[in-house]
Length: 301
Image (tube, rainbow, N blue to C red; front, side, top):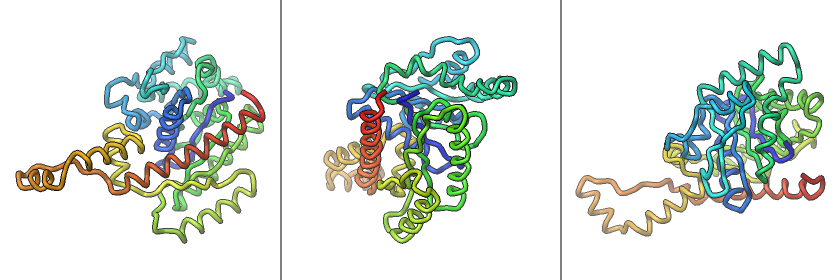
């Protein structure tokens, strides 16, 4: 799919889902028509976008029926204005079992995901794919269906190892089933704002490892544990969470907070990092969308 952007890393917990959700949401907020596709049986993209809390996901059953029986996929519509989604869950495990069995007989079956998503993708400016952390058939299928890949990394060695695994799968996909696949960049995720030396060291190491194949993206997503917890629990994206924090501070005066405290009640609490985190995601989304817009203008849809 010429408009599909995949987030992937061979290790879990490095920000794939958070980046996918926030980039999809910000692109839609900017006026793009966006389809978010969850390929991870954990279904955390649904939590980040809020449709899981609303009971709107189908646990991946729609994608399974598309793969098995060729039925058209009906996405969850208007998750946000201009943003639709394909959910994942228990049935997503069966999707990968089916594709893996088919691939053992016919190597081209790894393209089945692209085949079922392609007709739907044409209604959108951007398809954002959240892939599962483990390697194997699911990641191979996502790479076969995507036009661009972004690899998020943290500062730990496990995350770097996951980058190496993802790079190997990327290379295999590009040399066989998907020659048009491009590595758009590596995104630094969950870095302390005080750890400038660590950021610089990791950036230098990654730049050397990549050897000019792709950039380490300039924008860095800061560590903000309270905000990340609140956002996933409530289904809010970073810019939405920041808006709620501003609204709460304006609505609840200091006097009201004192009154609530004396009454044993808690005023709404938001992370002090809300503003900075929203700005980080906005910068990263802008960097990626500008790159995509430039690529589209040079090579066409």
